[in-house]
Image (tube, rainbow, N blue to C red; front, side, top):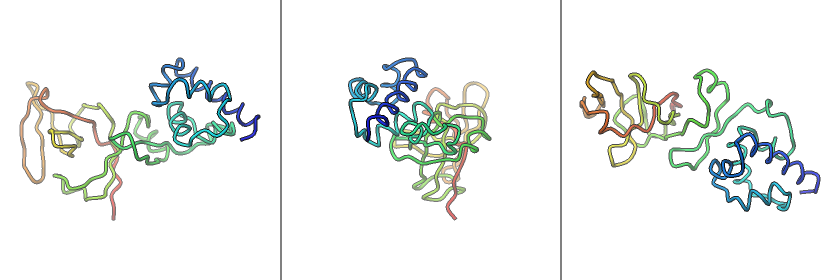
Length: 190
């Protein structure tokens, strides 16, 4: 990377840092050490890792192309979303998030293996809005053996009706239920 591109990258990372409220916040959002970020922002590193650039771009809600070249951020049409383990990225058209009224950083993906709702098949990809616990609908929950997809219906008295096509209906106190998030979009394999 030539010196002018390196300096431009450093300046744009500083912009992201400032928007997030400082280096500590950028470190928390990206998982990148403060010392590495400092070297990037001071244009010391001439060949930054792609994973680090992706994490910085995600944290700043900009594209990697913008970080590297300064190309207009509004040209970006896709946002990346990690899976529920914070790994494997999937890319979604921004119009999906706009239509749902949510942000990409509020979400994770989940790929169906075998599940209790027959509407989904192994390999289907769900977009899950984390920590969303409002209204009846399809949710990703964890009963202790890993994530599962269930229909939830909110009942009076702090109860939730947990509904499965395979196991029927179970009324559980909300306090005993580990809700990961609400399914807001599904990519169904044909």
